[in-house]
Length: 267
Image 1 (spheres, rainbow, N blue to C red):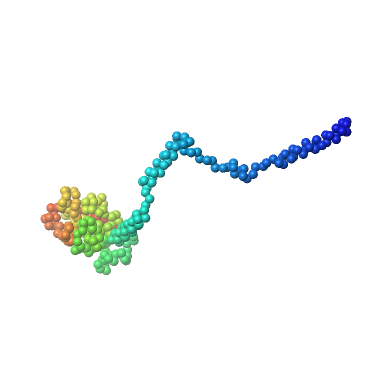
Image 2: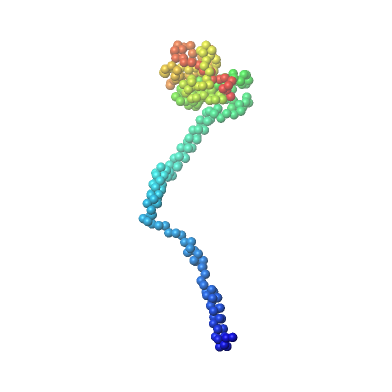
């Protein structure tokens, strides 16, 4: 048993020891929102002079690549954009004119009542015979409609004129499933052309000549009409005409004939 005076002294001390821990816990500072923002603060970028050699080299390479790109791809000015737009419109207009002159480039269902045949028909029974014969006559009719048109080098349209191969290109590609090449020599060596001997010529066969070139190089051509005649666009200053194959000049320069219109080539 403790003396009474000791008990009276210990009791206040025990109360103080119990209260102090709770008081310390209550006043302990807690992290605020301001402290959290400070934790996630953006890291400062080190100055260039403190970077490593490899890092500085990478920065230099990126700058060089960017300068090279800007040099190769200069910004287009307003005037240049306007010029491009004008040029594009002009090219589209030229393309529309070219397509209008060559409707055969866009194949479709060819029928006897089709309006696209109206400009090549010359009578009511024109397209009422054998299909191959009809299309042969279509091509020849298109050429004969150009008689008197002037010779124009590179010409392939009625409104401008024709050169020798341009006349054939205009007339025959209308009816061919696989289109002819553009020049006389290319047509002469065309893989789908059938060689025809001079004594077996048929209406619609292509005739080739070497007027200014050596043998095996065709620089002039025409289309056989039958009865020793052929249609051609001869040279500058002349017009589309019908000539005689028996003339000595043509006999001396005759290179060969090719048959293009067959059942396997027409539309």
